Amino acid sequence: MSVQSGKDLLIKLDLTGDGQFETIAGLRATRISFNAETVDVTSLESQGGWRELLAGAGVKTAAISGSGVFRDAGTDERARQVFFDGETPDFQVIIPDFGVVEGAFQVSSLEYSGSHDGEATYELSLASAGAISFRAL
Image (tube, rainbow, N blue to C red; front, side, top):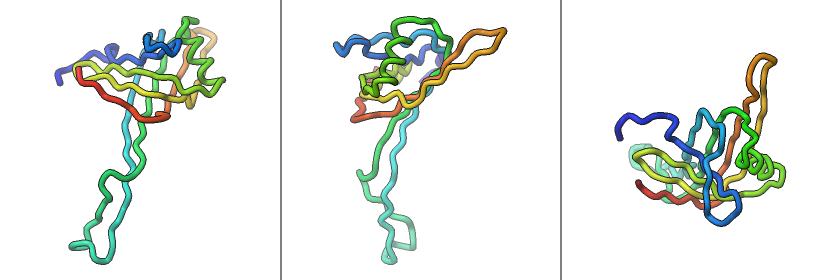
């Protein structure tokens, strides 16, 4: 993968449930992380005392976060509604020259802040709420 511009990492939200994704407006910084818990099955009989892990076990999760400026766009309004209604709509993350991650996420954190001499900003955190798909670009 070659060097990429950070602004090309996009978080998109399915606004109506019809599979039409729209980039969340006002984002300045975005991040996605994947995690897989391990299941330790080490015993006294483990060769050389080395840890053994159970293949394919454990819980997989994905987390998305972003921060930006409040623009009062349709995507901002929809993200707020998703949080307050506890919905788990589909989101997409476009990772340049890598692929597209898609699946249901819950808005786990929504924070707003601002100072008297600056713009209003927000931070958004999403937690995976089901199976995640990946499509290479």
